Length: 335
Ligand code: SAM
Image (cartoon, rainbow, N blue to C red):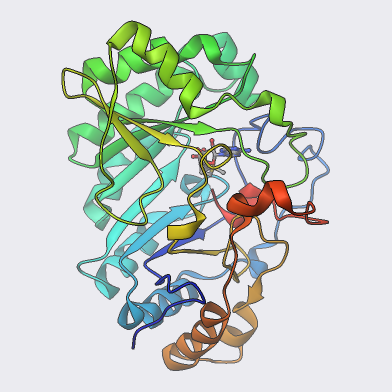
């Protein structure tokens, strides 16, 4: 049953985008110029159904799948998302089930998510300051207070909580310390993500990346020396550093310190294509197979043949290769 790619990397994690829609228009992810009122989102019919998603997950459990993360778009916008969580929990009682959210609707859903069998949420939060938060998320409907209420609700029902902050030079550098203080005070793990060149619409420039190392320099002035910790798992995406008081910051350094070598992750897009790298330009259509009545065995065989060919190492090779002509958008493939 062992399933490994050309570099001997197993398939342990699956990220599933359950919708390409979002209630935010983060300028680095779904800029309104490209995702405005006339943007055509996927029709309902094009989305994988919950039954179809469950077939894919079931098919991969015997091949070593351990973690599933629901993402999007904004996964809490998908109708009855808790029903999917329940189905996945029944499929894999030991599966590590997580969800990534912008937190705007988390207060409303926290209890139901926990009851459905979710283990953890990762909440994206880029600023404590309301004006900057709203500028970055390009929304006036929500602010950081809504997100914090969601985080508190999630913690109070017993969901694991982590916070992710995308850092853009000249945009939210002044928010690093306020965010760090808020998380240290509440003992919530905070991870800083380098602004990445995903998709084709976010006008990414290397000059806009504040590297993990630069963020650590800022943190050290306030929190004292940071000591790097040994990764607990080979495929861990965040590098962890500990303060003298034992608080741990994470750094996802996809640009300055790529981690492709250990990547055990596949992604299922909202319309049912399997991607073997966040920076892929094309996926492998599983939906067509599912709609031709393929069962778990056929899906497992299809994924096996895709994974065994896998040799993506985009982040590790980006400086020495030509930019792919077109990359899939983060909101579609799932961050
Ligand atoms: N809507 C959910 C959320 O906000 O967390 C889930 C989807 S979102 C695409 C997942 C994660 O991708 C978020 O933490 C977001 O900040 C991150 N992200 C999006 N575009 C990015 C980029 N260009 N570089 C780094 N992270 C990015």
